[in-house]
Length: 343
Ligand SMILES: [Zn+2]
Image (cartoon, rainbow, N blue to C red; front, side):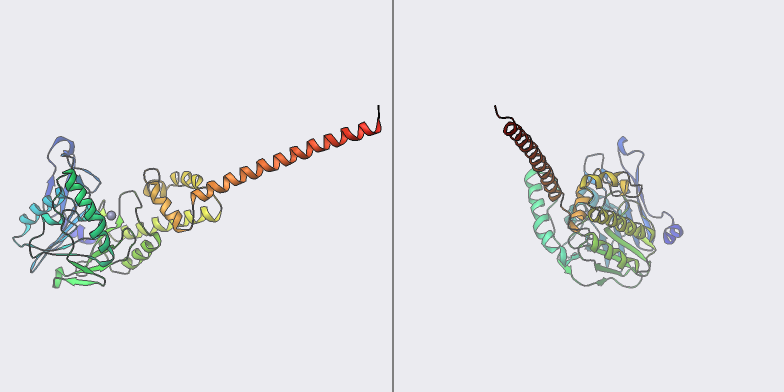
């Protein structure tokens, strides 16, 4: 947090129009000279009903502007007007931390003909498949998002863009939160744009929790001082430590449930009342996130149901056998009595 404390809240502060958002302001913070973050702070909708919620970045480099996560149309337009206030430089580069539409969708609103759009190679299929399908269904429904502009520069190894104090390293992080996570790291100002590998809002939404732990451990090796999470409030490296703590605790608890033959329902109940995990893992609202990790450890709630049905069947057969044996005994006794007392 040092850099933020030193620089304060320079840059513009933009309030939503409309009574619904009157109490809420969204800040454009200058984190270091030429380095800005648009911090939304929560996941919600604009007064007009459009989607917002993703934190974004702007780096004014010597040869143009780098945008981090264009997001949906509302936020992309919003950022475009902020950039126009900051500099007359064009948007030369766009970096998308991962393909999820709340980070990637409206790149076309910020890109010019020459703009390079960067993303990690491991997310390429999702950009070109899933996201393209979504965009065409939106076009069919007339939901108003702009044409989709896909990345034109995929990277499988870290690459650097820009120079000197605003040089940005784009680092692929494998597939942990989503296929093809990547981060933007500014070594001079020690600012990290972490995408959804770090979030300060409730919910563990990922595809590989083990890879996610490894990714955060790698990020903690960097001398990070400021972390801009994909969603939620900005902070220092403690945000990464908190994310790691949460993932490790959740994985350990789920692993223990499987080892101890705890039922899946029992596990969910226990997680809901867990002081660390209940809210932070958003157990009640997002049970699928828990199920995904449960399956990573080989757990299968359906197998558990089958096992319980087999147990009930076994008990029923046992009871039937005991009953049959009892009836047989009575018959044998009756027969013996009849043999001893012939009429
Ligand atoms: Zn995401």
